[in-house]
Length: 276
Image 1: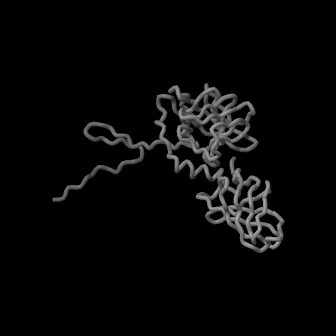
Image 2: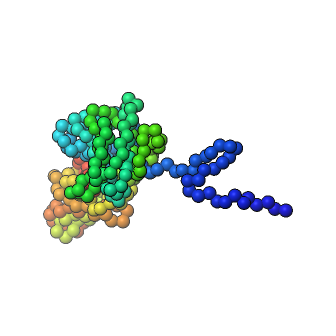
Image 3: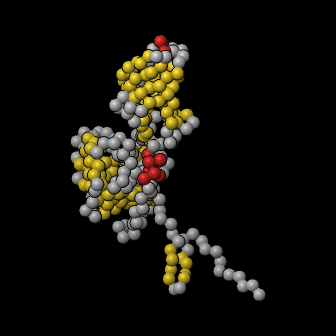
């Protein structure tokens, strides 16, 4: 005679009794921050030192001129100002409860919990809300070298905080490229020159950006129809298109109109920003 297991199905969060030991089925909560592993940060701008007010490692920026960030083997060293990051759109309810935690290179852990709209400040961690931009933000106090940071929905203490789990560099890079991407210096992109000398190029990037980004000015050499034309800080626009970006610039060099060509970038490349 067949014997069937009559134990009812487990529900999410149920405990499992096995050999007298309870095994938790509770999932680790999601870390709502992008680029939070500062031992291996996504740093597409490639600098090891940043001075404010600028974006630094991806998704994190300084607001004050006195601020600085150094990317080190021990983490990111912040000085002179707080380091801010807007939380990804749609991830945070400004009237909900959240916990921000950060660990520094000396092993110290700072944990704060509260409502973004009301604002909450700890010794190193801060949570707030920008009413003008309608965005929640987090900040890390200057004067410390940070190893990681995490923002969780709900309230935790230093004792109940989930163990920090890096998302992995590839996953972080993929998400960060929705906000900032670039074509490196000395690369070449192909395109077509219109009847009036305006130029449309296509650059393939791994991720479609969250909105049509702002493109930095273009500098380099345009090769077409046997001509080599110097392009010096020409404004450009970028549009999400298929699996890449369509880059448009107006050079007004009619001598190469209606020809295919390619642009060899100068020593600055092209940056595309859709940052918050």
